[in-house]
Amino acid sequence: MTEMSQDVVAEVRGQVGFITLNRPKAINALSLGMVRDLLAQLLAWKNDPQVLAVAIRGSNKEGVFGHFCAGGDIRFLHQAGSTGNPELEDFFTEEYALNHLIFTYPKPYIAFMDGIVMGGGMGISQGASVRLVTEKTKMAMPETIIGLFPDVGGGYFLSRCPGAVGEWLALTGDTIGAAEAIAFNLADAYVPSAEQSQLWEALATQTFADGDAVQAFVRLQAATPAPGAVRDVAEINQVFALPSVQAMINTLEADGASEWAQATATVLRKRSPLMLFVVLEQIRRARHMDVASDLRMERDMVRYCFYLRPGQSETVEGIRALAVDKDHAPQWNPAHIEDVPEDLWKSFFVSPWPAHSHPLAALKD
Image 1 (cartoon, rainbow, N blue to C red):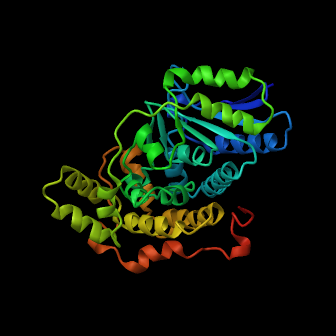
Image 2: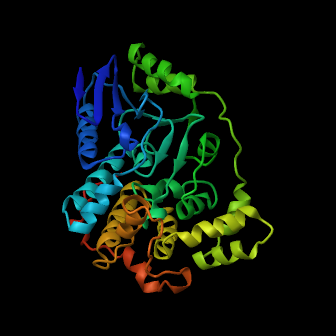
Image 3: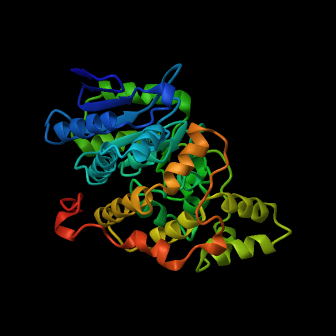
């Protein structure tokens, strides 16, 4: 059985449901239509006794695998955020519902996280029961670059990294590879990229007693240690465990001996100052939340990203500078870390909805 849409290909082979993200020209960036296709397919398979497990991969211009997913469709977000298109609200509500479904899915969900895995791509893979990475994996939550925050459950999964690694990844948007992804609790196992197709085909042709047997089979095939160095968590903690954004930047800029400190300070100075404060609070709040609560908080936050100050959205401006005009010169407001008022960033954490009318009120862990 094969179901085809333009950008999502879903089929059942043997006892496994297979999904291929098929929008390679956009590095499989998620559109509202793709979110709806994924949600509908996973709901259909959830209670299908013929489907013991689900496997998901991306595609690139050369074929399958290569890249998993670069995130949400930021050009759509810019257009919708600039014109008042109500589908902007639908996109985030439905995307976060999809993220929650994956985190709470009752069957094994196996994510082949090859190549670029960023933003929304993390949202449809971090809830997987087996998260596979390759030597080509480039993983990041780079939302502060566009004046957003690491959403799609980012507060939840980044805050579960060791030490202050979550703060570091969330604030800087830095990219990590396979070894660090596994060490930082953002992946489970390594498989060489050249062996992915063989494993994918084996899932389609083997006979399994139940979903647990599918998961055990995948883990057995993907037992190879991941190549690459792992950054020192203690060094990260010295900066990113500090109590405030200002303390972090002061410490980094005072460290003239460390190239990493100077480079990291430069990166943070380029990010939206307002969103750095928002993101730090997000990660630290989410450390004490379940997935559903975190996603509800993030749904509140994203409303403020686009509508807090009409005509002055940090996110619309950030996307404009990166992907629309490509001048890489966003006009952040406030312009400097030192100028962010406390009441402004704190406003992101006041829900615009009463609890019973929240768009994600039905989510339960």
